[in-house]
Length: 255
Image (cartoon, rainbow, N blue to C red):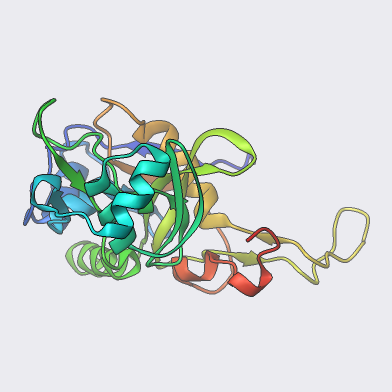
């Protein structure tokens, strides 16, 4: 029997506003798309609707940039108000050059602009609203998983997914910033390959792989498909959070 992984994009999800009931939106979308949850399904939720529901919007017009932000902004040719907000959301600057500011965001994620984004944020061309990452995406994923399970009686996993650039590759790819009810990393060390050789270093970032697959349907522009259901994923590794995907700084050869 063929092994199959199925991705289902839920259509008709409304534009999310601060304070909206994300659980209610998910349950309504499942119903409207005639999707019955099955045990082991994984719901991959685009970060933007989580952030919007949690009110993580900031108006740049309200920010008075610090002297440090003004200095860095002049070096990299970015809005000093945005730079100030990035610094507030970061532990440290990792790299910068004109047009680029890569930081370790407060969650430990190494990414451009601390994940702050203005794309798909309502307000029109003149808007100065930007969107921050959720304060605790693992907590957001866990709360949504609990709500879905209590409402449907079906145990599922939940991933909060964002897009990230990579140091040596062009383009962005989906990755997991919040995980609940499934493994984040499957440790394959000690298992045997097809020829009986023991795997010594192999760890599979399964939550990131699911997030990347779902990102093909989430899209980056006007697709309007922030909820994707993955069906057929199986993994016996222990459940983890997205924090388990972060490499400790002392093991980072490139910082």
